[in-house]
Image: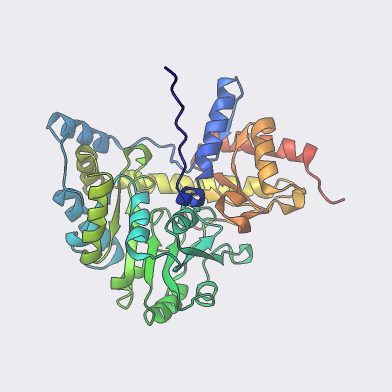
Length: 399
């Protein structure tokens, strides 16, 4: 008896689904390592610090105490209360636990917000260069992605005019990310003021990705939720991965008006059922426990920022502004004579330095590379030495 192999016809929407280059480069780097090559990892946005002991201990105790069963789809009431208390205190506003939805990682908040609010043909504004999942999810939902630029001459800080100039009657959502991935740019309070006045008069949702809000090096983070005229329009994405070095724990949350939170909770029910209960108990310990490890981590990132920016600016053909937040450097490499993708590939295969091409974050990222300085100063120094040696031998520098 012969069996015919099944041939699946993928749905058209799958052709609109993008990816995240960091994981692809990580896989290639790890493959090279299995072949004996020494690689310095500056590609992945993952703190190299361990999760604080009191958080780990809370998770272990939760497992022993039986927190291994289903929880409500929007999250445990105890964690929603802790998030509302902590997020409200840091932003200077009152947040009701009914506005909070807990998810396995922060990405689902963006996916669910797009599915809940955006119709095919609607326009969604997003930063370019920017986190690639924004454009991917917009296209997947059948909406039209409309990029706004982040410019090197402004240190990649977000300019309100770049957003306001491209708003149309079809704009359904504006995505903001501050501090920003991949550039480390921020949106200043003065720019927020301009945005708030204009967006308050429009029927648009404001999606604010604040996952790096506690990793800012100058000034204080600003959220659109702090503006009374934007409070009900705003959806805040945040989580535990970056702040608490909990990337593998998959624990994030969104803050939004209660009626939208209810709908996002329904999407959770239909997709993930719930977030793991014992990780939620650990999340409570993270929010309500000692915060000194967060402060120490931020200060260490500040030290690493100085090391990598200074080192990149000493490499021929590189020009690197100082990022104001997160843990990414985004140098201009146009004077090397190499395209971003070609240079990133060569640095990995030849120099043993894993980084990302700027084009992994949108077409306007051409001419740049992204380096994560979520690695030790020792490894950053090793990577810089390798980069300098390779570039001096191979760059097509003007005479």
